[in-house]
Image 1 (cartoon, rainbow, N blue to C red):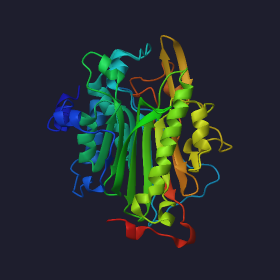
Image 2: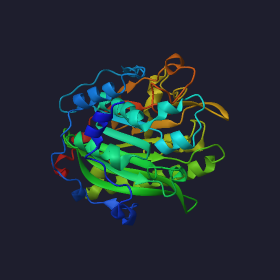
Image 3: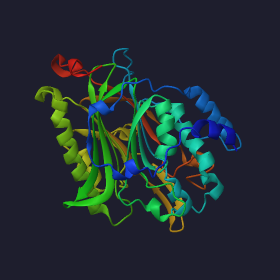
Image 4: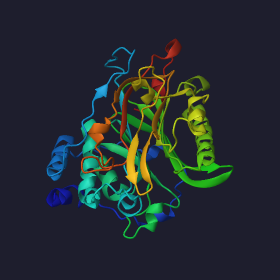
Length: 389
């Protein structure tokens, strides 16, 4: 199904994951802003791509219907000089893990076929057209996401896990990792850091990407991070240590301010997206919520009291039983940013008795999406002159 459109979209864009240059490069590095090329990257019409996705998926049920809602107690915010920034966070489920290791016993293997599942993932992304896209469990970066997102006008970074479990699966597509894309027409790149997270002074198998971006519309800077912490129960202390290491790195990166003055660097807002593999009761969650960086979890704002996380962001059935958990988050600097809208969480009835993934949803994790905007800067401070537009 969708063979001709698949060849049209992906055939000329495929790159080898086993490229010698990839194997030899220093993955855990900081990149220069000069590596963000100011070239016209657009070339694919997103409406046409969306139609091709829908055509390839015509024999599948319609995807989950979800609405954008305004958090309670907030007034609508729409200003031509301060437009909202759309952030999409999603663990998309590594293909090798979905087919070879995760054991989704209520999900037919045919529903996990990459030749169709990739269109479900792309349909979700292109429907919402985020300005910033944070992904975990990406094992088709070079042959799918990088060429397609580049053709849509995005610039991206990818960082694989050092010892990806995907490599244990026969006929894998290489290691999985985190990917972070931003829309080039909306942002310019100031700096990128690739981090291998540590715990108790020892390197771990988990990574993070941190980008400092300049917003072309407002002249302000935004620091965005994506991560995927250690999975499974029994590893709570390791996740807490990884979170502490990431927070320390974020304090260093944001306080450095890209070489700007102390006053300017102190105003850089932060967005941290990820699959933390941790319920709100865990210590790593408390670390983030009480951090001196002043972070708040966006999806708490969906609750009536504004203080309660959703009941679930992942819901799956494995041989060990059913698991319904809140593990995924979008953290933001609440003093510098405001949340204008959020994509709601589907109901149990919408998800269905076989849970996730399924024919109508490609991952065991739900995508999270919020529209954020900059709050007014105190004392009229501006860093517009600092941006190379």
